[in-house]
Amino acid sequence: MNNLIASTAVKARELTPEEIKEIEHEKTHYPYAQAVGLEALKIVQKYQGWVSDESLLAVSEYLDIPPDELEGVATFFNMIFRRPVGKNVILLCDSVACWMLGCDSLNEHFKKTLGIDYGETTADDMFTLIPVPCLGACDRAPVMMIGRETYYNLTTEKIDEIIAEYKAKG
Image 1 (cartoon, rainbow, N blue to C red):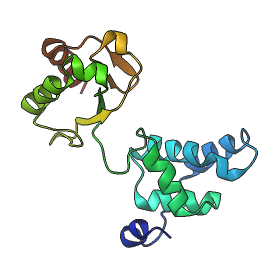
Image 2: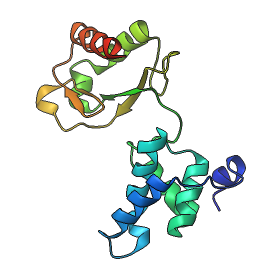
Image 3: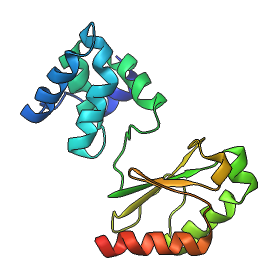
Image 4: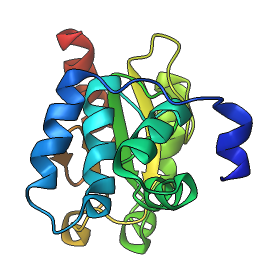
């Protein structure tokens, strides 16, 4: 067992009936249960907001995948959150194109306006800021995503408008 997991999670939590139902559905799309690992982590995150060590162990036991292998999957994909995140996760692209067009100054703007840096969450749990290596929109850089929405050609003014919209939604 992975030492990190063993030291922080004594035992797995129980998967909810909803999680099990969705995982079982996913299993119908794959030739063997272990191939469902990533999808199961996404399902747990959908319901829990993130994938705790206890949740990872639950999926590991349910699908009979060694915890360290599942941890490797979880940490490889940057959209699996291994610690709590805010209601709105801001993925700020820091690829070469975005860097050349000012993503560093945009990060500084987030520090000033939201009081958070990469990997941090606002005190009200509304926003978490995470750097990502590429969002696939270099022709419209700098770019960020919040949820399923992608925002292009960012400026500090545009970011202020977007953040205000999310704050207004609550």
